[in-house]
Structures are given as structure tokens and as C-alpha cells.
Image 1 (tube, rainbow, N blue to C red):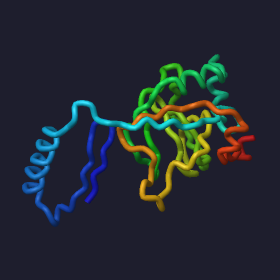
Image 2 (image 1 turned 60 degrees about the vertical axis):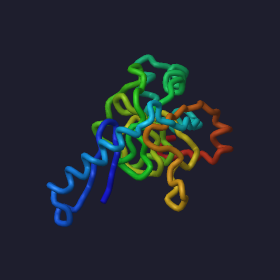
Image 3 (image 1 turned 180 degrees about the vertical axis):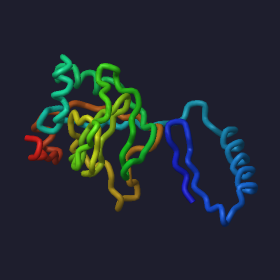
Image 4 (image 1 turned 180 degrees about the horizontal axis):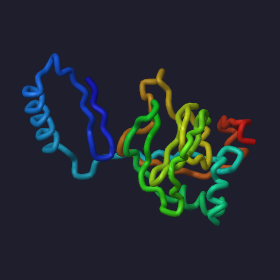
Amino acid sequence: MNVTPSFNTILIDYLPHRVSIFEFIPYLEKIVTESLLHLPEQPQTNTIKLPVYYHVEVGPDLIEYEKQGVSLEDVIKLHSEPEYSVGAIGFTAGFAFLTDVSPSLQLPRKTSPRLKVAKGSVAIANNQTAIYPSESPGGWNIIGNCPLDLYDPTSASVLPFSIGDKIKFESISRSEFEELGGKFDKEWQ
């Protein structure tokens, strides 16, 4: 019915009343074995550059870094320097879990999630970073906002990225953020 890949696992949903586990497991083993024979040595990935406005106007949790002695400039440098890999997509439609945040930026998830996180919010939880593709509840630490629409269920390519793709964040100014259609959440100001 469904195949959902993640960091190092694959979830396969099937209907046990239609296919017995004794038929399904050998079939699955055959598919995996054949697939492994045809895997490229270096899978092709896309690198997608995404603009981010890093500022307390859109990143209320930047204050948490300031309390720890990490300046806004350091957050921008540490967050926008690496290329991240899309390790999984889930939680909400289009929410990409990106790998390997700098240890200096790692903060735990909030103990009490916000009821509303603005669309485009760029956030960190533990060793991962992500962009909220739509307004939703969330417990990650918000450090900026990407003004681009990253999830379009009406488009043939619903998302601009897939698992394995690379994401590179690029810091933009307030005026660039506004020019790209960025919005400010009045609840945080």
C-alpha cells in the first residue's frame, strides 16, 4: 500500500488479509536483493539552495542562542555553512528532516510545543534542522524563515526535494525576505 523511506529504515504498509506474511516476505526479499544489485555507486542528488532570513522577527528562539553566548552572526555562519541531507520526510506533508546540525547549534525540542509555527519557519531540534512547509504546531527552536513555498499539493512535483537531496541555506536580508513574499508573524513581535 505504502512505502516510506527514512534515515536508515523503510516502512512498508501492506494488507495482511490480502497477502499472507509468508508470501510477502520472500517477495520483498527478492525485490530488495534485485534492487541492491542495481544501485549506483554514487547516487545522484540535487542540491537546493534556500534563502533564509535569520532574525528575531521571524526566529524567536535566536534568544536562546544569545543566552548561551552564540551571536546571531555565529548562528547564521554555523547554520548556513554546511550542506544538509534530506534524511526523512514526515510529521506533516512536506516537512523534511535535515541531518547533521553543528553541535554548537543543537538545542533539545521544546518541552511544550507551540500551537502555531509560521509557514517557512526554519528550526532546529537536537542534531536536525527543518523548514515548516505550512503553518502547524511544533516544538522545534525557530531561528529564521524561508519565504519560498516548499509544498504544493496541486503541483506535479509536490516538493522541490526528495530523500537524499542536499539543502544549502543562504542568509538573506529583511528586504530580500519581503521581496520574496516573506511574512512576519505579529504574535512574535
